[in-house]
Length: 151
Length: 151
DNA sequence: TTTGACCTTAACATCGCAGGAAGGTCAAGG
DNA sequence: CCTTGACCTTCCTGCGATGTTAAGGTCAAA
Image (cartoon, rainbow over all chains, first blue to last red; front, side, top):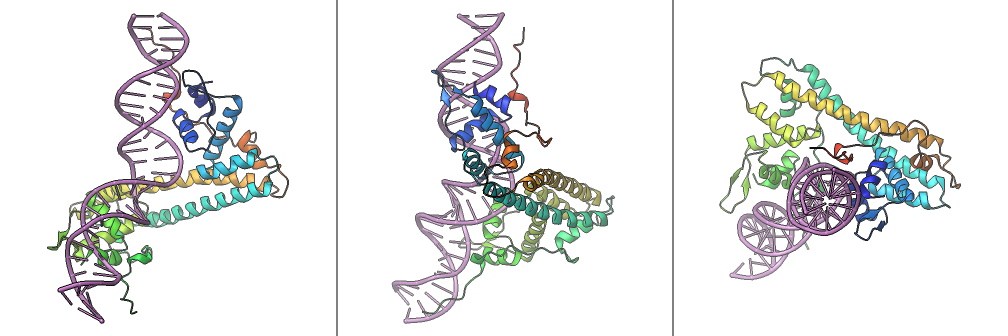
């Protein structure tokens, strides 16, 4: 089975199959004499596994761990569950961040007349937020000017 | 005002200020004789605007539009509202996608004992989804083998 | 033989940012 | 004056998971 057929059968693009091989997520497959990659049913199965894991939002690194656990007959389901739960927490963290943006944006949109006049509470808020929706500046340590150390 | 002071005052890192200048999101600022960038209160105000817009998840391209509208005294608030509503829709689209992943993952996690035994419904589902949580393969047109055109 | 769909490798773009290297500037203190 | 070190400059690299393009080799069918 060629890479194109494997791509169609697995739902993973040929491009990504090569990429996954390159980053060692999947082992190098066999090759024909002409250098074409060939895929077995087992290879296909793994690609489908990867596609489904990607559809659940797992990162490639996490999928690497999932594949290890999958192939490990003596795995503990607790390890899988921990991995999945950590990923779920990450998904929920991202959703919460988006939700906060959406809430703020929604309230601003509802305040905006949306007509021909230039006055706009959305721009007004971006300009000078008075309504308690101010966000914390991302203050990383390196930005603060330090007083000269004595010594 | 130097770039470092502007960074601290605006909450936008010096790195990003230079970047925003480079991609023409903000106009080039004045320079000292030594080549140091200098920032006025007006520049600072714009940087704060950008930071708040970024905090609402607007892309840099969208912020470019917002800045144009902001500076355009004859703008129509309808244009701002449309832009904001489109962004809100995008946020909601992303949240829905995350929510669907989270729902599936959640149900799988609840099915998994999470103990020392290897049997795991999470891996089982990734391997061969039987429970209706299968996702559509991302089938982009270029992947389908076309029949030879005659002509 | 030609055609064109397929395969190969390789390099670059995306997006918003972080990090670092190499070097110039500035202000304070010995 | 010289050093120190915080700050500034430009330029380059990397991230993640792809998409895109390019230049070329292979294969099967007409």
